[in-house]
Amino acid sequence: MKTVFSPRHHGHSGHVELNNGRVVPAFEKPERAEMIRAAVEGRGLGPILAPAAHGLDPVLRVHEADYVSFLSEAWALWTADGRDFPALPSFWKAPGMRAIEPETIDGKLGHFSFDAGCCLVAGSFDAIAASVDVALTGVDLVAGGEPSAFALCRPPGHHAHAGTMGGYCYVNNAAVAAQAFRDRGTPRVAILDVDYHHGNGTQSIFYERADVLVCNIHGHPTQEYPYFLGYEDETGAGAGEGFNANFPLRWGTGFEAWSAALETACRRVEAYAPDVVVVSLGVDTYKEDPISQFRLDSPDYLKIGARIARLRKPTLFVMEGGYAVEAIGVNVANTLEGFAG
Ligand code: SP5
Ligand code: ZN
Image 1 (cartoon, rainbow, N blue to C red):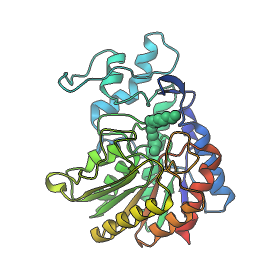
Image 2 (cartoon, rainbow, N blue to C red):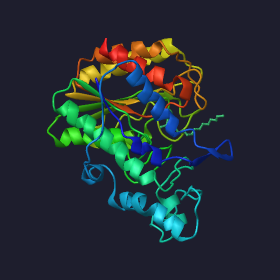
Image 3 (cartoon, rainbow, N blue to C red):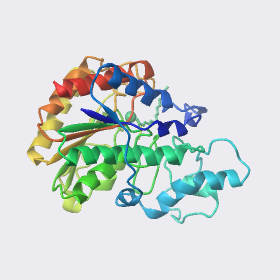
Image 4 (cartoon, rainbow, N blue to C red):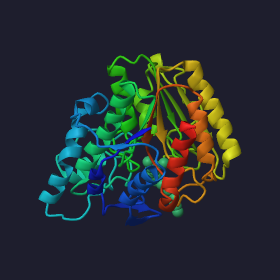
């Protein structure tokens, strides 16, 4: 399997997040992507390619134009006020407040985010643009006839809504990839999100559409981030009714219960008969993950890859979360190796 990777992810570094009520170095750090790249290389899983530039048009098929403009100019506006440290939102609108984009950067940061998990530094936008180019180059490979490809995206994407960043995610790489497949004439796309956290952004983007099935296995929203989406009764709306499926699982879930949910999700995908599958691949389901509460072990990822392979569909893996840096490479490589068989 070919992997697509860009070193431009390094631009997004030295950033912080709000965790446990404190501003701390972000768990979503550059070492993550480097550990994965090294494992893909070390295990001989196939060539590693640089992404091709696709411009912002494919991003604008999924994201709102004012939001993309904000992402591109946020650092310049923040530093124009004399600040040379990372930009982190800390004000948000509650229901009942006005959704008008403020003129000042502090207001814009809140307007276009839903948590304090999305920091912006000097090189963030370049890394964000490279990350979505990685996903789109993966689409090129699979649409061009490769049976599968791995888009080693960083920063991740599945928490990002059409006009909102959150949870380390700015541009929803998997959603942009799914839309790119549609725009190249692929009739039916399924997104299978196995990251520990619910892919609220991906769900929201395709919620009223029947041409993209979204299946999510994740920590239960009564216990886990993102808390306000990801319940089982969210099944889609309008034309999309029946084309969203959530499999929330309680803290402490091990591989037996997790893989039963994967089996059910895979059967949903099979029943949909997609032309292509996009896997939002997070390995924060791992037992040692520092911010997560499932108990999967490294060998389990071989079985996950093997089950996804049994869907027998062209498959694009898009990297999402996973914060146990020492094990992230092994867990991702195991998934890809299990898929390859
Ligand atoms: C892409 C992705 O995996 N994003 C995850 C964002 C999670 N952000 C909030 C995590 C809250 C975890 N609180 C755990 C406290 C640990 N002591
Ligand atoms: Zn996650």
